[in-house]
Image (cartoon, rainbow, N blue to C red; front, side, top):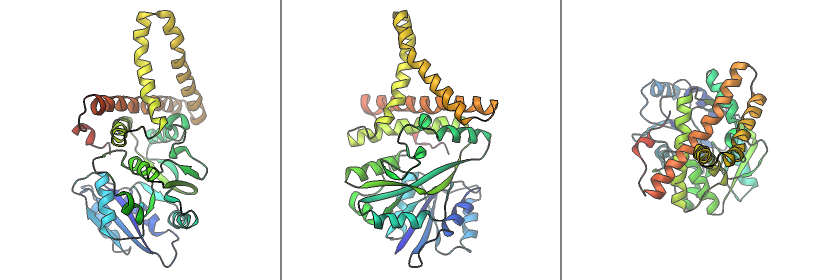
Length: 337
């Protein structure tokens, strides 16, 4: 049995060694041949030199150039590089537990209807802002009900992070859509479920994810998630999950309040109850997660950034893709990495 682990990477010199060491520390069966393929977007921060040094210590560690410097190209380049029976995708900032690979492999044997397996995400922060962001992202209020980042119990789901797929899935439904700069994993897993496959979230396997620690990058990241989600919806001719509609509807609601106040003050007062409820839930979940005054204000600030950035991006996507019938904006192709 052959297993390929594919790591899309660009300028991750501070994390790539721990990521690789965790993969090779996994308790794989002796009959499993492991290949680790780092698909690098021409890093210029010392990452490539680090990988070349590590290849002297770890067998079957390969460095592949990704001249496109975009994630879906990295996925496909890694899949095509070496023929394997299973493919595991791991981000360079993701640190797998020792049982992640073996447990995923066993689930495919136990559950023949499963086409994709992923585990629990434990957010780790690189600075104080990252800690605040990770706490907000670990809540259902921050990320939505059913989001894999907040799941705690093993079950079927609509998508997972850090997925493993049997090779025959790619033969059956094709590869990652290289037009999708964001949401390429959500798109692929939606294609899995549309083709009759199931996706399994396994709570007994997990990974550490080093959350990026700045608000501007967070805003751009979630704005792009919303924007590209509309493109995915247009591609499939349907809304892939209902929870994605909540942020854009909320943004529209907030934008209409001033207009309603101008037209009918009494109706606006009634209508504004929703806004009060939003800030009430923001306050409630902030209190649950914060341990200091400074952390309180940081988490309280993070929730609106998550929701408004996604909602605004989604609304721009509706205008761009559904009303004006345009192709994706070049501006939204640059990642917030």
